[in-house]
Amino acid sequence: MQSPRLYYGWVMVAALSLTEITSWGVLYYAFSVFLTPIGAEMGWSIAEMTGAYSLALLVSGVAAIPAGRWLDRHGPRGLMTAGSIAATVLVVAWSRVESLLGFYLVWAGIGLVMAAVLYEPAFVVVATWFRRYRARALT
Image (cartoon, rainbow, N blue to C red; front, top):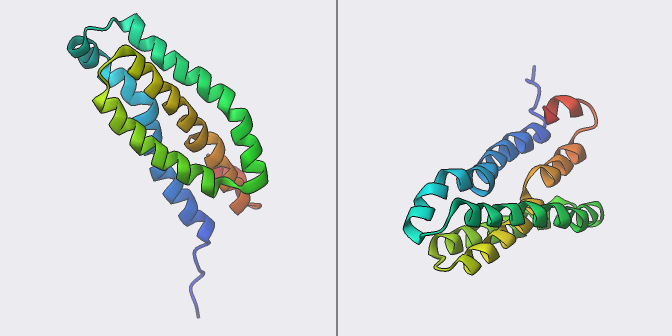
């Protein structure tokens, strides 16, 4: 008697769980962790720095529209792969920023990346792999 095989969609959910936790941690929550040390080192005010974060959220919201169209036409693989590569480059750039303008530009780029790698593309992956148990896979 054979044991039932694990549905590959559950492997995808496990992988997405790890990548989403990492992406949210680095691209979304890390800002608040580094806010005070960056401000102290660079001499920027909290208001100046959080303006860059607000810009990232605005860019992410606007970029979600074309990202959604891309996801509908081409699926999530290319978008999430490109977004992950760009995120890596932008996080390294964030560590090298020397001016407030550069800080804003990096965070505008991170906003684009947020639209490419956070919830919406991940949910498309889950919706593609699951007809039955979709609600369970998404929660």
